[in-house]
Length: 343
Ligand code: NAD
Ligand code: WQD
Image: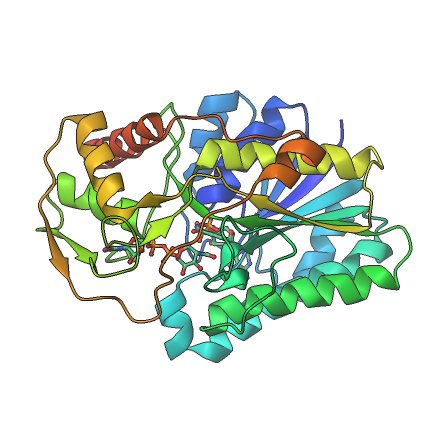
C-alpha cells in the first residue's frame, strides 16, 4: 500500500481528504498538533472508512519531531501539506505567528523530502494569491497580486519556496492546488468544519445563525459592482475538493506530471453572490435565515471565481456536487454538532 503523510489531517479539508485517500487504497499517516482540531476526528474518520489512520500529535515546525515521524513510518511516498494557520484577520494581528507556523512547517517538510526519498508534495494554496483578478474567470496564469494579509502572503511565499526548491532537487515534484471557497461537510455528517469562536467565513456563520447560536448574519455590502450588489465567490464542496488531492497524489506517484511543479485551480467555475447563497441555503434546508445588509468588510475581494478547465482536463477532476446538496450537508453537520453538544 502506498503511504502518504497528511499534515493537518484532522482539520476541515484534511479530514475529508484522509477519507478519500483511504477509500482509494492509500495508507495514511496524519500529523496534526491539534491547534485547530479535535482528537476525536480520528474516530469519525474511522467510522466513515472502517480504517483508523495512524496519527502523531506533532507540530510541523518541530524539525526533530518531524524527523522522528519519517523514521517511524518508513516509505512515505508523498506528502499533502494542509497544516497551517488560516485566519486572515488574526494573521494581521499576529504576523509572526503566521509566518513562523506556515513558513517553518513548509521548510521542514521540504528539507526532509529528499532525505527520506519522498517523491512528491501537494500543497494547499488559495485563490487569495490572485487578489482582485483583472479577468474572470481566473486562470492559473493570472498575475499574482500583492498579498493583503500575512496569511495570504504565506501562501505566495510557500509557492515560491516550493518552486525554488524543486528546481534544484532531483526526484522531488509538487502540485499546488489553489482552492477557491471550500464549504459543506461529509454526507455522513461525521466530518465537517469546526470554527473556532465567532466564524469569519460565510457558511459556518449562516449555519450557526440558522441554528440560533448567532442572532443574524451580516451581509457585508450590497453596493459592489455585481448583479445584486453583494460579493461573488466560487464555493467548492469539501468532498469534491478532497478528491482533487487523491488525483493529484495519483498523478505524482504515476510520474505523469508535465512539469515538476504544477498548479491547478480547484473550483466549480461558477460564481455565486452572498445573497444568492443565502437564498439557496433557505431553499435547500427550508430554514429561514435572519440577515441584514451592513457595510463592506475591509479587504474583501469584490468578485472571484475559477476557470477550473486545467484541473478538469489535465487532472481529470471536476466539481460535481450541486450547491444545494452542499449547503444541506453543512446544515446537517451543524445539527449534528448541536446533538453532540459541541456547538
Ligand atoms: P483547519 O484549520 O481546519 O486545518 C488545519 C489543520 O492543521 C488543523 O487540524 C490544525 O490543528 C493543524 N495545524 C496547524 N498548524 C500546525 C502545525 N504547525 N503542525 C501540525 N498541525 C498543524 O484548516 P482547513 O480549512 O482544513 O485548511 C487546510 C489548508 O487549506 C490550510 O493550509 C489552509 O490555509 C488552506 N486553505 C483553506 C481554505 C479555506 O477556506 N478553508 C481556502 C484555501 C486554502
Ligand atoms: C465569503 C463572502 C464576505 C461572512 C476567505 C479568505 C481566503 C480563503 C477563504 C484561505 C465574502 C461574505 C462573510 C459574513 C458575509 N481562505 N460574508 N458575512 O473572504 O472569500 O475568503 O476564506 O485561503 O483567503 O480571505 O471567504 O467565507 O470569509 O466570505 O457577508 O459573516 O461572504 O464578505 O463576500 P473569503 P468568507
